Length: 365
Ligand code: ATP
Image (cartoon, rainbow, N blue to C red; front, top):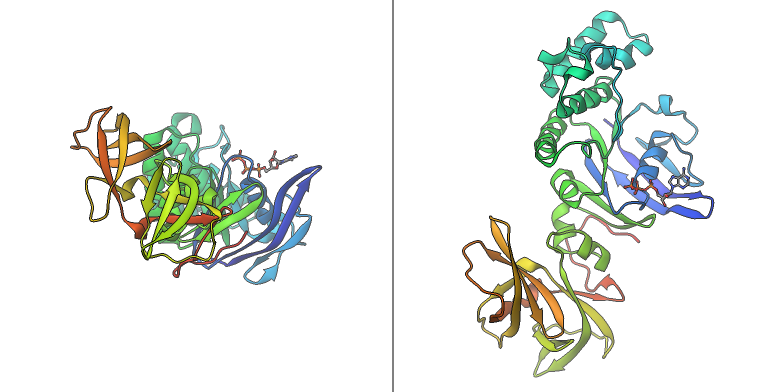
């Protein structure tokens, strides 16, 4: 188990700036997830940590010591890739022990470590099988076991579940959480799936175009996104985001959007009449009258996903998604009053969140 620190990592591939001044600290035993859209630089960063790609600028430190001059083998880091390859002619036990054999570890110790790893991953009964006789999820576990068996200082996982179907992904995700609790290893995990990031990570790093947009606990990132990119990338259905201006009237502040006005309470901001964006999560809108004069929206469509309903409505000239309980009985065409709690409204100016809240880990951009 080790800590990991990245200092101002920059990487170019010709004209492409794949990473731009990335700073990050991962504590001993922390599960850190890098998440962002395709091409944002997640895999490049992981490969730089592993030593498989050399950064142009910046430094990688493990337990406070620079590893920039160390070869991948010397960094004591294990990596599991999306397209993990098992040796087809070897049994599961031989696949698990392969890395240790290459390091001339005595046979008895290999046997013990293979058995212990198989126990942790729940694959003891598969040890004599060949990879072709395993399911996708079992193969995935063996691939993870191969990295785990060495007890590396750092465990790097690059989209390890993306070849699994949705159901298996969900169960392996749970197993991964258990596994992390048991081995208490430091993990850096790459995914483009925000649900995976939020359910797995102690710490989530949201990236876009080679930059870190926000680093924080999942609940902080969800409740206090640092900017409009994070606000809309994390959360499903997406946060509703509207452009408009603030107007102050009778000690209250109103957001004037395209064809609607939203009371956002007594908030005082010194932004004059400048344009800004207001975000409201679909679950923070209630259909029905609140204490203040309600907004009105016209329902256009309803998506019933079984456990709840997503109501797609028109608010002035904007569209809106509202999360409603499954028993909600509305019809398309209906005009309904809406209530929005002013404390749940997110305000962004030039893309950045206004009034950074207490309780976040850190932020950088
Ligand atoms: P994905 O989720 O699709 O795997 P990613 O976030 O992991 O994406 P990277 O693979 O790190 O992104 O790529 C970051 C950027 O660097 C992309 O624009 C990619 O095209 C570019 N890139 C990565 N590797 C190379 C390379 N070897 N040569 C040239 N460009 C590269």
